Length: 117
Length: 117
DNA sequence: CTGAATCCGAATAGATACTG
DNA sequence: CAGTATCTATTCGGATTCAG
Image (cartoon, rainbow over all chains, first blue to last red; front, side, top):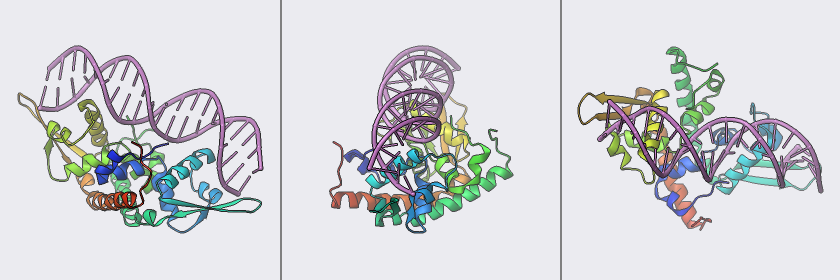
């Protein structure tokens, strides 16, 4: 699992890059914006992502203190994930990135950019 | 080299994640904000990055049309890199991410978060 | 100065199977 | 329902070397 070392904390942009480097990190945070969500509910939003992989990513984000995990002691188990204050600080960025992604997609389609498949 | 396929273009946030997934992508774009910059000059801003790796990253970003490469036909060679319009569209996001990174670093230091080394 | 080619090791993600 | 453990395939970045 990725960990931060002190040299990672010398450059803000590098820090951000590393913390958000997971393949699904951004989308997880995006989905967590709407409040606490259960594991399986979260999982349903992804295409081609196994629960094992999602677990890993969530633990990763938890270790970076972007995500909070709340386990309810009941049967069947119930676990909810939400954003910490640090994680919520990413709202504007995530929104901006989403807007940019939309524009990028538009541009790709307009320019008939080369796509595989 | 990473390429986009059509299924990558179905979700804006996933698209953004993929396009910016390179370990140095964000910082490269950040550095290119100040206008065209030559290869070696760019390289000097990185610690622990070989020219071969920087070349790869730049080609990657060029293929995504975020970066423009301008080669001057002279000896010794001179090549300048700059952002395309698509790349410039990331300004606000990059700035936001940089601010967030700063806060994150502050928080890590305040909370004495565990760091390797 | 800039970049291509190759090899290699580390890091990831995904498949699968098993547990409380 | 949620999570763990193991294995494997692939990706990616970095080192090194060679070239225009």
